[in-house]
Amino acid sequence: MIIDPRFRGPAQSANGGYACAIAAQFIKGPAEVTLRAPPPLDRPLAVSPAGDGAFHLLDGETLLAEARPALVDLEVPPGVSAAQARRAAERYEWLEDHPYPSCFVCGPARDADDGLRIFPGPVEGRELYAAPWVPDGSLGDASGTVRPEFVWAALDCPSGIVTDLFGEVGVILLGRLAVDLVQPLRVGDTHVVTAWPIHREGRKLDTASALFSEDGGLRAVARARWIEVAAP
Image (tube, rainbow, N blue to C red; front, side, top):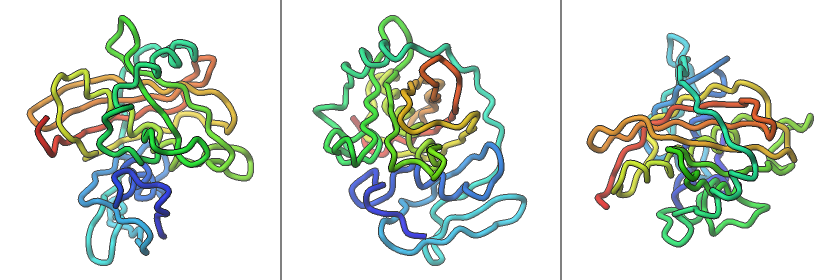
């Protein structure tokens, strides 16, 4: 397969969540993906079985990511309303100073019909970030269901942006993402994305994120590990 440049995170590589979904596409049920190298854009990649139910995403002989079945066992905090999520998004802290402004998911330089423009901000009075999201038709299959790779992508960036709650954090890259797709999402419907911090150990920052329907139904949940690659 080839990852279209539209689905970039950093300028020269794929959005981490999108790439993780590609590696995990043949796993039934929840999966965890560890990224080993930046997935390149616009060149042929392969997904290959690796034994014990795992799969590798490969660029020639270079291992880009390893996917395997997983249990995403998280206590998900109560969600927020779409109105609360819109207010939180108005406080998006990366709007003016974004390390990857053209990111497919959270980049402010992307147009509404091109990127997801998910802009999580702090929810007042809670250790939680939130943003609304209305998936457009380009993200769905023939039945109008949002394709899994875009759900993974939507869960990715909020889990990174919420690392702001750890205090001073430098440039970060996604190291690992585990996702449980609980219920399908429909294009055109309003959803709410939330994210919260779990634990920090040196350069390793563990966080989580979730996707809800407008009426509060849980649609997907993710656990992430981010790696700080440059000092603040």
